[in-house]
Length: 297
Image (cartoon, rainbow, N blue to C red; front, top):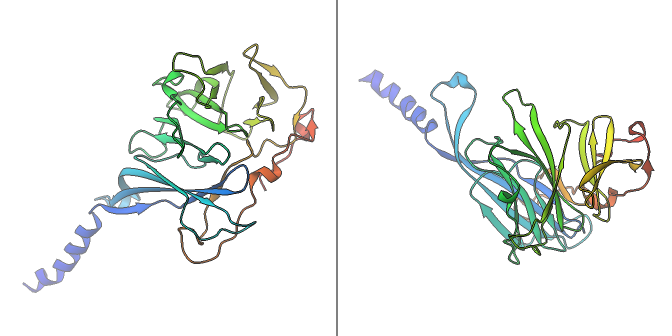
């Protein structure tokens, strides 16, 4: 009986550890193209410990993502007011994939389709609080393709998308660049996107995309070569010159994990990363990749 009394609390504690409980990832944050808005992204899920404590992980299910868009009242600080827009989707979003465009009120992100966080089954999505329903990725993304990049243009009217077949060894087979119209001006019967087959694509620093300031073209770095899109010929032309920086890829976008602070996290003041548009410039242009530099800092 004494043994039972001693073991009962341990048994109860162990059972509590294998019950499903709420959890979330660190909140991510991104600037809009004007610096007037910030979007916070919080991935929420349920988790429980594995029966085998040596597995070093937990079981996870029922992913959801909450987007909160805040208006910035002054330079370098937020007002602490509630978000001006909130939106929720029933799955996870890929880290570093969330963008909010102030002028068009469009939210862009890459969304998963199952409980395998960060898995290959995902798609690009667009939402607007003003009502936006015309972006349909099924027009260009096949079921056997994984999306790797989804970067909206500075004017918010286009999006650059990298698709490919992800093999078991993580090699990307048959990569393709899509320039999609997200203005909502094309009917479902129109071809509202352009395709540019790529010779190779890897998720490494030697493979990058970057919009021009005026949103007219996209620069594509593939190892030791830089190309630019030509929508008239629907080909990639070798770029004779290109921006010295390939980061940021657009004038707005994610800037990393959000530290604690006002506006939904806590009452602790937080340091604000500078808006991306302040360092997004086409010039100076260079003619060699040896002249490019890391502009991520």
